[in-house]
Image (cartoon, rainbow, N blue to C red; front, side, top):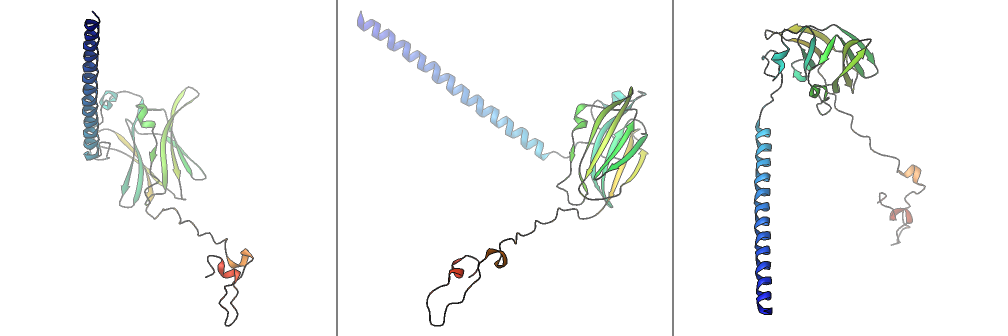
Length: 227
């Protein structure tokens, strides 16, 4: 009887271990499959070209066609591009835009009247601070409500003083483009200055030459930088 119970216990233990082993093997297999799928997706994304709006190249954005024919003016895309004469921030909209321009320090703001931002993603900032050919550090859209009127602000933050040229045109695709063009230049941040605070003048020590025929070293020459 005791042997039978021991045999049953050993059998149940073997079954449990087999199940755990199978479950672990399946988990590792699934994990590897997921990891491979993620890596493949990242490789595909890295190999793809820019899929956004390029003025003059037609419109390929999803869901924008549903705005055609509507009276309200929708801002459908903010963008940045390099131009032969410098750099450009632009916005695509369904109709021409009436705007007011204001400047405070290194910030230019265009108040776009009677406008709506289409899709929340279009409010994400354009970060351009790594491009040395533009004075723009970043630009972004934000929706505003003023006295029942729908307004949008286009905020352009600069790292250097620059005077933009603003223009609009309606493309053959039916969409309007507002251009904020900046002149070319080298807008790289200045190199950090070398710290010269540690020098002979302000340390209180000065190198002392050893006496003739002496093999000793002066205390001043024991300090790094005076050798």
